[in-house]
Image (cartoon, rainbow, N blue to C red; front, side, top):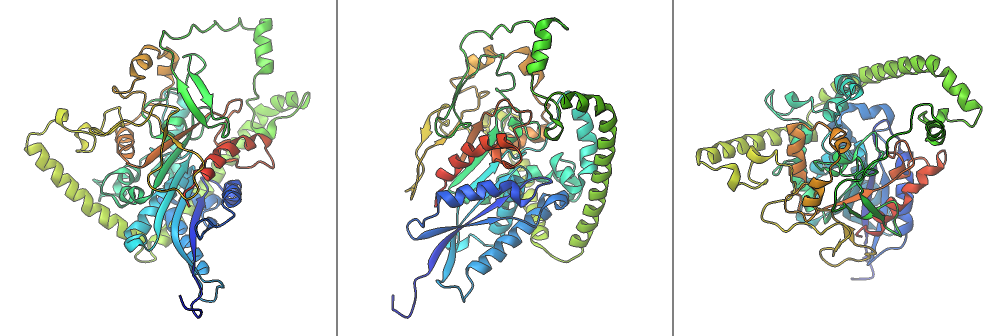
Length: 505
């Protein structure tokens, strides 16, 4: 190269996207660890981290699609700044990665679909490298056999505006002229721009809390049909944490014998009963947890405070939902967009898929000869593993990364679904399921089962399971969301460092 043409620095752009009701600070620690880990350029490539800001707080009500539009615009704006002609030295974005936390994972999946459909990755201009979701409701929010869960599924789509419809799969009328499918199912299907976009990434990772995630439980975060951790204290599950990246689970093992005998609970009002109650974690939210004797005052005032908090919450939901619907109307009236282009494309793909299925049925194909990839006739199978392909390694084993790694520090951990009949764990699993384990499983819909099967056909998918005990809700801890105000959130740093050390530059 001549002296008059300075070298262009290659840039790897990483976007970090927060979740529902969130703000950029929720993924700040993630961004910090990524910058620290990759502070130096590797093979001439330097890292630039973008923390998405335009979807903060009430704007997360506006739906997965419109939220993703904003993320894509921020990506384009950051690239324009990085590649500004006046920059010295000149820089060029040649690689792209994205990590989404909670709702941010769904926004990320939609956003890469937009980028893919608009040619962002064409001709090797920008190479898609790392994609990860952390505690993301990949199959939507779950329903359990409880009154509270039923109420959430009834009022969630109303109070949470467009995002609520996407969470609870109440949006099928918007994806196929009244005869379509929910957005989350469309995003999981082979042939969709969203699925095709994920296959372009070198690494796709779903990180899930194994226990204590009240907001996004294991099954939806991991896209699995069964939760083996729901009764881990009773089914004898042995869990081994990674020495360097705890609370990341290195391996877990089910016993080969019968389920453990659980001691009977202590008699009500006995000394053992009072001791257990005294030592149990507080059920109050963190901001109402005080030391003795103020904790007693908080419990006394709870019957007064709870109705006030509930009224304030409903008012806030209603207010934000109203303004969200107004914003959506303005967005939908503002002309053509990436979203409208994708919807049109998806409708054409759906029609082609329907025609193919009809042809297959006319040819007399049956479920017995069809794998999960063949069509919807056997999409309700419990096993996400693909027919005709090798099963992933057993828990605790490692898989070498494909291709040459510039700065690889650890291997990815992959888990074989326990419900898979071909899994070596299947026999012991079926013999050790406890009644509580069955009772506490969610009531999956057929749509959610299809989404699970679809997502588990991704050829580059890895899963990371996280064990955070001793907290009421591990959803914020897994991403180290607010360590300044809640010191226990720092327990999630191991997860972030695991992802950072495995981040391919």
